[in-house]
Image (cartoon, rainbow, N blue to C red):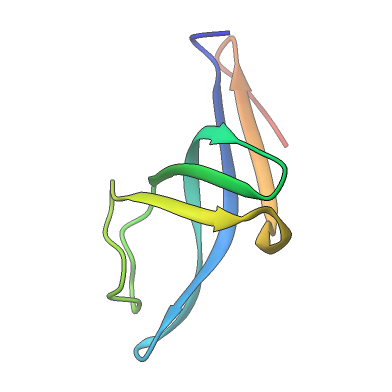
Length: 73
């Protein structure tokens, strides 16, 4: 529903390192997830908090959703 939140954890990497970060999901298709980065990177500089990102579903590491204020995942 409109009040639900869904997020996935995926890796991001650049010359400064690699880290797994949460992405708040906007849409999903057969191969990709579109959303906004929901972490402030500690090492990676290629992306920023709140930035819209496109990630491969194959890279999905973890997931969660919030429904009615209750965390699942």
